Structure formats: structure tokens, C-alpha cells
Image (cartoon, rainbow, N blue to C red):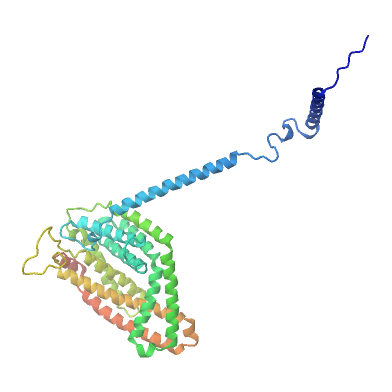
Length: 417
């Protein structure tokens, strides 16, 4: 039998042979790995975990989440901006924010207008939307909050004691967060006023100059912290905006007169101040008693200012020929109410100065330089502070005796008249 003819080996045949040999080699390696190195349920070569390649699912998911977060942030920012614009549009104009009732409005709408006006003023001051300088904005804000708290005490009979106390607590906490700069500024002005009263004894002392330098540095630090803390101011403004939304929903009886609307609150304010005057007159009365009395006196002052009704001018009315027109309107005020407001204001200033001097005395006692090297100056300062405090206390007790002489019910009847 003849041998089969040999077919010449070309390039293609060589390639087929090499590929076949490679396939056999790969199958052998596969079998070896399946039998020795791998378990039966695991795919060869680590499955899809090829070296040098990463899954695109995780980066893609992170990118989508970041995009969604940015989009939500823009949506929230735009919504907040729309709310702020709507809130600015709803604010009362400056000419409608007078802290007092007007003759062209009901007492219920007037009290609501006064509360909204004080809140609008405070929010504008905190957000820098008014023309008041930044260093005075915090002080004016705290004054607006004090007036608002006094108004809520005046309306406690209509709002309810629990509701009024809750709102006053919110306003008190908001004012406390802004108190640092004002308290430090008061210390400097109190020391300056004391030195002006005793220029020979205190004006040339080196210890007084060192104390003032320390107080001035504290004032600058506190002012920078309060004015520079935009986050705190914005948080307080947001809290006041929430209070404003609740005040706008007040439902006070429109048919009631000012005397009936505020009579219960006014009697409580006056009664508390009268009780504070009696306690402050005791021999063992401390600074805390005087400070509490001052708060009641401030409430009486602001309450009287609310009830000080002014008559509004008629639109298009011309002034009479025999009288000079004053600010475009005629002002008609109750002498009795105005007198109570002035007396309470004067008494509150006395008690406030006495309290500031008490805080200054504590600062003098704690000053290290005055305790060590300036003992003589320290004694002079403390002696001058004690004398001024005693004089203010005597004057305040005399003024308080005249202001709180009538009994509470009789006082309210006079105010109603």
C-alpha cells in the first residue's frame, strides 16, 4: 500500500498547528486550575475581576448623587429666596411701625400692627437691610424685642398666660444671643461717666486708664464676635420670622376697646411694679431685687406708650390759618398717659445706671492690676461707685413711691379715663 502523499506545510498550516497546540495547552491549564486551585462553584480567572479594570457603577452612582444634591440645593436656595422676597413684600412700611395706637384703627388691629412692626424692624436690623450702622443695629434690635415682650405682657389677658410666656421666652432667648457686644459697651460708657463726675480723683489715675484699656479691648472683641457672626444673626432673624408668622394669626376681638383689651395686662404690670418697689425698699434688698423691679418699670413704660393714642391727619386736609402745621399732622396726646410713660422712663434709667455700676464694681474687684499695684485707685473707684449707687437708689425709691402711689385698680381706672 503506497504511503500517503505528504502535503507541503505552508504558512497557514503552521498557524493552524500553533493555534491548536495553544488551545490544547489552555484546556490543560483550565482543567488543572479547576481540579487543584479553584472550588467548583467559583469561575476561573477570578470571574469578572480582571486586573487593571474597575467597575464604572460606583463612580457613576457618586456622580449622579452629587448632581442630585447640587440640584436640590439650588431648588432649596431658590425657594428660600422666594420666601424672603415675599416676607420683605409683606413687611410694614417704616411710617406704619409707630409703637403706639392710632385713632384710625381698632385697638385689636393696632396691637397686631405694633407687634408686626417691631418684628419687621428687628429682622431688617439683623439682616443689614436698614440704614442703621452695624454697631448700633444689635442695640436697636434688643430694644425692639423688649418693647415687643412688654406688649405681650399687656395682651396677656387676651393671648393667654401660657401662650404669652412661651412667646416671651423665645424673644428673651433671641435677645440673650445678641447681648455680648452691648454689655461690653455699657461697661466702657459707665466708667467714662463715672470719671466725668470725679475728674480730679479718677481722671489722672494710671489704674483707671489700664482698666479702661482692658474694657475697650473686651468691647472690641465682643463687638467683632457679635457683628461678625453672620450665622447667629441669621438664625435669630429666622426665629423672629417664625414668631412673626404666629403674630400675624392673632385673633384679637375687634369690638373691644383699648381699656378692655389691655386692662388685665396693665393691672398685672402695675401690680408687679408696685410689689417690686416695696421689696426694693427693704434694708436687705440686693441688686437682684432692683434689677427685677427695673424690668417691671420698663414694662409699664412701654405699656403706657402703647396706650398713648395719636390722632392721624386727614388725607388732603389743609392746616388752619392760625396754626403752624407740624410734620403734616396734628398730635393729640393724653397728658396722664404721657406723664406715666415719662416717669417710668426716668425711673428705669436710674435703675439701669445703678445696675451697670454694680457690674462695674465687680469688674474692678476682679481686675488683677488694681488688686496688686493700684490699690489706692481701686479704693477710690469702689468708693465712688458705692456713693453713686446709693444716691441713685434713694432717688429711684422716691420716684417709685410717686409713680406707684395709687392702688392698682384705681390706677387702671385713671388710665381708662
